[in-house]
Image 1 (cartoon, rainbow over the protein chains, first blue to last red):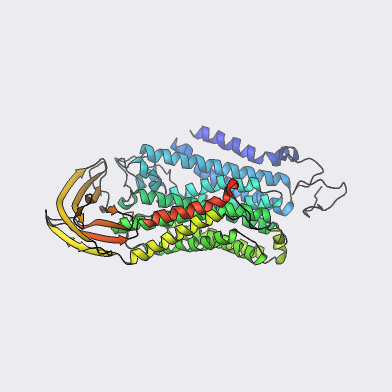
Image 2: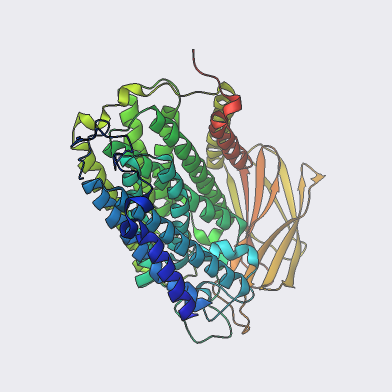
Amino acid sequence: MTIVGGIIAAVLSLWVAAPLIWGAAAAGVTRGDCASCGVRLEPDARFCASCGATVLS
Amino acid sequence: MNRLMEFAVALAPVFAAWAVAASIASIRTARADLAQSAVRGLVAATACAVIAAAGLTRALIEGDLAVHYVAQASSVLMPVRYVPAALLSAPGGALLMLAALSGIVGLLVVRNASGPARRWATTVVAAAMLVSLLIVAAAATPFALRVARADGAGLSSDLQRGGAVLHGIALLLATVFATASFADTLSALATGGIDDSWSRRTRRWNALAWTSLLIGVVAGARWYAMNPVRGAWLESPVTALWLLPCFAGAWLIHLDAGVQDAKRVVTRLLLGAGAFIALMIAVAFTDGAFLRGVNQGEADVAGALIGIVPVIAIAGLIARLRRGAGVLRAIAGVRAQPKSRLGGWIAHAGFILLVCAAAGSRMSREHTVALRDAEIFRASDPFGHRWQFSSQGMSTLQRENYASLTVSLLARRDDVSMPMLSAEARSYGLASGKESGLPAFITGTLSSLFMETRLTITQPDGKRPTVRIAFVPLAPWVMVGAWLIVIGTLLPLAPARTETPA
């Protein structure tokens, strides 16, 4: 039962961490969208025009 | 299987802590990957809490005495219908259920939020879950393994009543819905989203929370009235604490409907947050449970640590409001909320019935008498009817989980025969043959449209048992009034039956 619990915990942990490991693809965000509200960003934008979030990259 | 449940109990706060940390980090950095990981952490924490809560329910139903919580709050002979009361009578079960249901309802709030508000909603829901889950995992583990005993300590006798079960479940649901409302409000406040959409969403959560709370409070009042061992209903400080959010909620429900101006919206916001905080304080005063039996022994003070939640909630609310009027920039967009004239009539009719019933209870008449076999007692009720009670003596009965001593009186009102009035003194037993605590006194009732006649055993010993006969005017109106208020409150939320004010 401990082994089953360990496997379930490992699978759940991997699923939770997937967006961090595989990045934007796993998070479902396309390059060029605001990471905060999803609105499309201008190519050279440093702030989102919709929500004001800082554009990191 | 129990080890797996213990594992789920240990894992749930880890995921909830991750959800809090990742969502806070995503708010500060605006990173979408962290935000999604936080939501997944919340889903994982909820899944673990649901699995553990389901496992504990199964253990209680099956009477698995190897599980610590079952041995503590249940017994082999306890009927299955009292499993919810056992589940909600100590922090190990009550806070686990609260976390599991808060997670499920909180995920709905998170799903309906968008952009930065989603991150805030994730933070608030996960933080509320985290406190409950940490208490359960660190101080009240329900699955801590023990050497299996022949029987558990048994559920307190006064909790083995339908009213207690309804009271506990309704209070649990009220707390869950109030948590959802608060999470929605705080996330909207943090992102300047106090707008029309927020107004409609929180109205639903508030209506569900308040109607649940009202049912819980009314069921609790009835449960106290039928259980002399509980004492007077309003004498308990915890009862008064449950009443506070009930009054705040009644005001909030009135403000939620109709024309909305800025002052009204701010009052709604503060009342909603206040009701949530008051509910969590009441849970802390019940030591992290929703029910406490008189036979339950020493309180599990670890559960009172849930009082951290209202402290965090107040701090979060003040921190947001200190940002100034900017947090309310969308407040002008809040439109009038639909009212239902029919719903209003029904709810206010229910309220009048409740007020009448409360006034009627002040005019009740009580008589305490000792009656031998065939002895007759005569009395008049507050309406002037003459009653005659002929003692039919005592009888004993052995049920599956209790021995019952019953006193029956043949009642006549104005020389017209009425149904038999019977009251019981129950001694709940364990499989070992021992009694599980103080006896429970079950009140017998005779109800008519305008009055309830109650019979309670106060002293079962000897050949002349002492009984209390009470005439309570308008008592049957309490539950009718409460259900009318519930129907009237929920009616405007049904889209097909709404009408907008002119």
